[in-house]
Image (cartoon, rainbow, N blue to C red; front, side):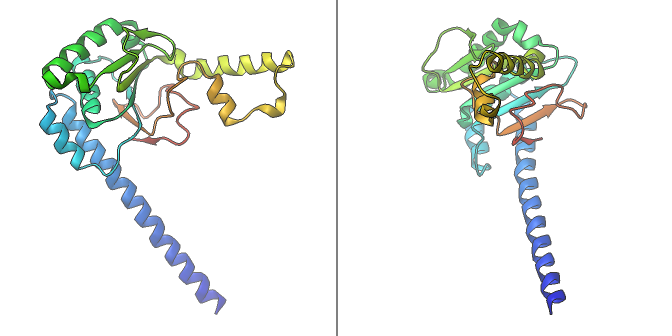
Length: 225
């Protein structure tokens, strides 16, 4: 009898696992299709509203990882404006060469132009603040609905190394104890994403099957496409 009970439980577990995997796959596949449409096309209010109806939930923080050699500012900014229109509050864009961060003024120029073209008279409802890091801002718009963070390799692994150094220094100076370390403490000590929630979803562009150094600590619970 115990054998049959165990077999039934294993079957139930397998069915639930399959259902969970399929549900997650369809959710992520829906995002992949919508992002493919957003990339290379100028968004419109009508299309963004239509896309929103196809999504059961929105990430609070959407991450974009650019693994391509050549970056299209138009495509990147189209996806960011599309995200604004959907109501996503935080976006981060990472490229392994740090090109976008070095050219933050150009990124803001593209975003300003697209914001005007897409939202028109409604653009005051879709304001954004561009951050080069958690502390450096491009322009001033403190009441922005959307916060966009430009990231480079120095904000990923190197930031984690800096944080580990800060923690060791604090322990050596008896400001902290070794037992004080916790996920919340590490989050509070990281420099690059202070004030930003961890990304709920990360979308990779390019053929490289790697995160290329994108925020290794903050992506421990992130869904990755």
